[in-house]
Amino acid sequence: MERRAVFVLLGLLYLAVGTLVKAVTYEGPPKEILKGANWQITCKNLKDDEQVRWTRNGETLELELSSGQLTVKPGDGFSTLSATQARDSHDGNYKCTSDSADSFHLMIHYDVKIRVLTPKDVLPLVLECVNKSDKAVWMKENTSLSTALTGNEDIIKINNETGSLEILKDKKEVYGNYTCKVDNSTIKYKVVPKPIAFLAESTSVVEGEKLHLVCHAKEPSPGARISWTFGDQNYTESKDRVKISNSVETGIYGAVLNVENIEMTDRGNVICRMSYNWSDPNLAEHSSEAETFLRVKDKLAALWPFLGICVEVVVLCAIILVYEKKRNKAELEESDTDQSPDTHNALEPISLDEPLECYISLHEPLSTDLPISSPTLQSTKSVHFEPTSDNKPTPNKESDVRQRK
Ligand SMILES: *[C@@H]1O[C@H](CO)[C@@H](O)[C@H](O)[C@H]1NC(C)=O
Ligand SMILES: *[C@@H]1O[C@H](CO)[C@@H](O)[C@H](O)[C@H]1NC(C)=O
Ligand SMILES: *[C@@H]1O[C@H](CO)[C@@H](O)[C@H](O)[C@H]1NC(C)=O
Ligand SMILES: *[C@@H]1O[C@H](CO)[C@@H](O)[C@H](O)[C@H]1NC(C)=O
Ligand SMILES: *[C@@H]1O[C@H](CO)[C@@H](O)[C@H](O)[C@H]1NC(C)=O
Ligand SMILES: *[C@@H]1O[C@H](CO)[C@@H](O)[C@H](O)[C@H]1NC(C)=O
Ligand SMILES: *[C@@H]1O[C@H](CO)[C@@H](O)[C@H](O)[C@H]1NC(C)=O
Image (cartoon, rainbow, N blue to C red):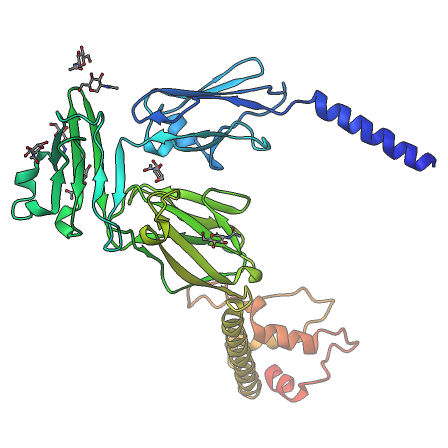
């Protein structure tokens, strides 16, 4: 009973603390921001000791902050992130602290509307102008439609009443940039074919290393967006060890996947899906996916060949050493029977009463290879270095006798 009471009390305390400590909240633009406009997001209810570190989709903003593209203004319990010019890349989920459960979704309104046209689309594809006005002036690639589509005039039609441009046929000449001008306002469209995602068939990563994948498009597809499937989970933004970032090179959002610390269990298919608009009603027709098989190599798999080489080296060294020792022994035996005067003193048995004398032959330049350290001396010493009463060595008697002559 007492135990239960303690638990209940603890639970109440937890609830009380939970309501007292408010989580951070965000304030920002209510709707999507037009590209080029300014914006700011404020995060409130920051605790005094809370470290403010703004991120977008889990990615640090350091580069944009240091270049002045974004600025952070700290305040008492709040922090404001702002930009003077909204860019496509600003689109995403913002957080001001790493443990903030909430986030603020900033939507950038693209000044270019992308329309995908595939053979399966129901035609006509209608591009609407600003104000359904008959004053609409349509252009393609900055020139008049008749110039841009010479010889293919039949693939488009301007609706007389609405001012909309209607695409009647699916031909590759129709792809491109369109603008509609009415008075001061301009609407931009880009008509594109279905994006084709591409990944290598298989990818190998050594266990514990980083997986780095870039989802490519077969044709340039700037503005396309990627959704990744890694380990039975879908990702469009960074989460935990899965880091997603944009490809600056191709202008494809979320095209770069990085996963730290690959484990054996990560083995399997990694999928990237490419689409211009994930809320497109014809998503199946207008998106494509590519898949790569992730092989995780055993950390030790890389070690075995290395160990093999090590063993080889050791064995070779051993063979050389044994051979050298044998050869030295043979040489020693040879020199024992045929002494030259130079090595005479080295073979003199040493008594403890006598001072140790060394003779260095000076007909050759002095080297570190002094007789003291010569293996010949050492081996002789080990045999002879024993005080004997009559100062006469026991082994090697024959040669010593010969030397004293
Ligand atoms: C649409 O165009 C008409 C004239 O063409 C104009 O009177 C009207 O104000 C415009 N509406 C908007 C919302 O711009
Ligand atoms: C179209 O012309 C405008 C100016 O008239 C220019 O700013 C723009 O860059 C041109 N666009 C292209 C794709 O050539
Ligand atoms: C526009 O519509 C009028 C009738 O509403 C028609 O007479 C005219 O030919 C049409 N113009 C074009 C370019 O289709
Ligand atoms: C459309 O405009 C972009 C630049 O805004 C350009 O890179 C692209 O080549 C244009 N498309 C066509 C079909 O000319
Ligand atoms: C175009 O915009 C300017 C100001 O930017 C305004 O004074 C002018 O009336 C506008 N023209 C039309 C036709 O709406
Ligand atoms: C991931 O996305 C694919 C395609 O949209 C869908 O079929 C699948 O059910 C999703 N998986 C999860 C775990 O949401
Ligand atoms: C995406 O598709 C939806 C549904 O058709 C549409 O309302 C929205 O404007 C599209 N978004 C873009 C950026 O084109």
